[in-house]
Image (cartoon, rainbow, N blue to C red; front, side):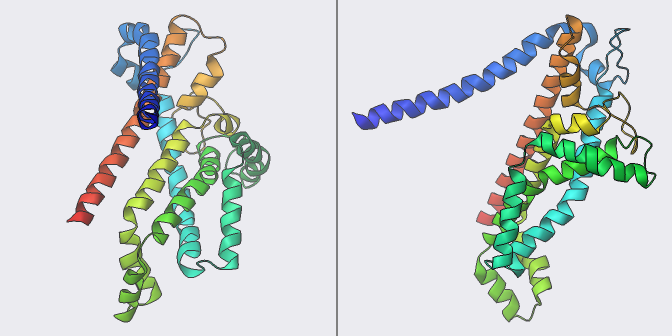
Length: 285
């Protein structure tokens, strides 16, 4: 009796998750139908004009700004994250210094995103202005740096877990064959932990694409194509900055931007699932 009741509760909880996801998708699509009929989905995402006063709407600057900034953030983040993960997981494994570094990384993970935005606005932006990178400091470069710092804890923690999951026999065998520590890491440890590191990177991209509050403070929030020193607006910040006064077609287009963002996240999750499945097949083979 208790077992059946527990099983029923678990079944209901699983069904609610499915219904919740379906409800989100239905809400986004139902609120975007007017925009689809007016502009067409592909016409909307490929147009580069956004001017609410003249009823010109195109999401290409938002999409390009989001993607370019996320890619730059990864380029800044990945080398540093892997270095810290290797420091904790290989060179100083289970030592006091490694434990301290892990505590600092966990602390970074708990900082609210708005605090990162304030820090970028009041600390990083004056540095960029002082070295002559930009007159105002806002733009793709500053947003990429802030995003890179924000996703550091995610990439570091998951990458370190993947490195620690590699069996010690792999390390011992490589060293016994005469390989150096660096050769062992490069040719044995990193390939064995590839799926976990890939997961860390993809999850970092997901957080970067979905961030809004911190980016709204450092991006400049202007509708421009994402050149390095341009002030830009992202998919998330476009919704945050305009939803308060949007109405009718304008509001429906903001829901369409939310739908585009949802599609991006679903695409990233699909890529992650495919990568993990292919890695599992190779491991089993």
